[in-house]
Image 1 (spheres, rainbow, N blue to C red):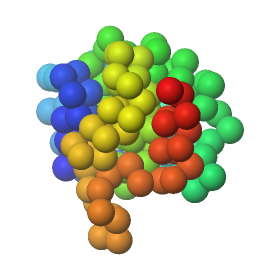
Image 2: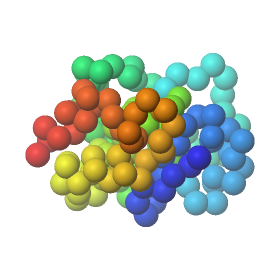
Image 3: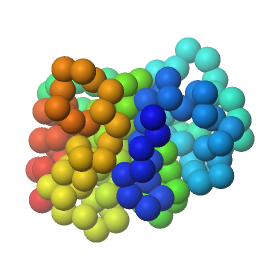
Image 4: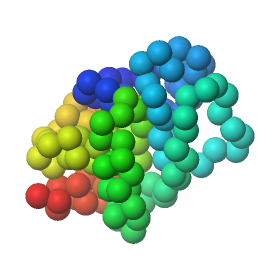
Length: 138
């Protein structure tokens, strides 16, 4: 399922994006893929390919991801990773921070509105390292 986080910001798992690829371009101008991909995605929507590890300790590429978030803050964008919860959630939260949300507000919004695909977790965006890194921005 592709979930709307905020106006102009959507988040999804790769498996949910592929069957809906052609309908995405009507709302979304860019897709940011935060996970590895074996083959290219179809379609005409510009794709930013920036895979990172889903590491429970966080990412050592936070500064670069923040620059990406700054670049995407005013663009209708879909953030995507394999499960659609953590790597895409990190970018979604950082985009919200760039849009003026406080870090705790951004985390809460992504957790509440983001896709919930993992049966073992209570909400989206649960990676403790990623959440900590966003919250430390305040």
